[in-house]
Amino acid sequence: MKKGEIWLVNFDPSAGHEIQKIRPALIIQSSKINSSLVTILPLSSQVQKKNKDDIFLQKNSKNRLFSDSIIKIHHISSFDQCRFMHIIGSVPTQTIREIEACLRKHFDL
Image (tube, rainbow, N blue to C red; front, side, top):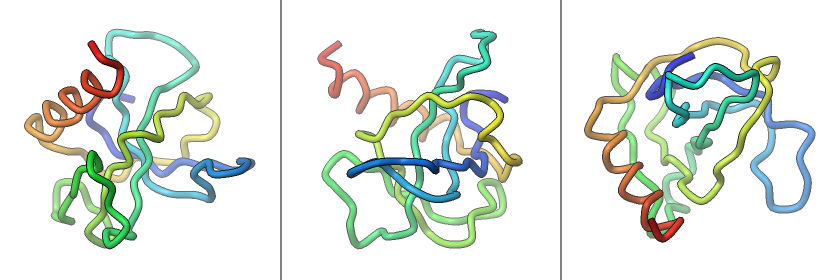
C-alpha cells in the first residue's frame, strides 16, 4: 500500500456522521511508514455535496473510478489493513500536493 493509491475499503461498522459502507479511499500516509494501520481519505460519488475543501476527482483510466468523485478532506481515518479489499487505481502527484495543502490548512501547520 502506497501513498496516492486508491483502494476499496470497508468503513463499516461506523457511527453517527462517519463515512459508511464499502467505498474507495485514497491512501495519504507516507509510504515510508510500516504499520498495520493505514491513514486514508474517503471518496464519495456525490459530487453535488462537495464541501469547500473537498477535492474533485474526475474518473479516468489511472484512478479507475466508476464515476467522478470527491475526496473528503475532513474525514481523515486510519484503519487496519484487514479493511482494505483491493487496489483500484491511483491519483497524480498534483492531486497529492492539493491534499497536502488542504491538510496543512486543516491542522493549522
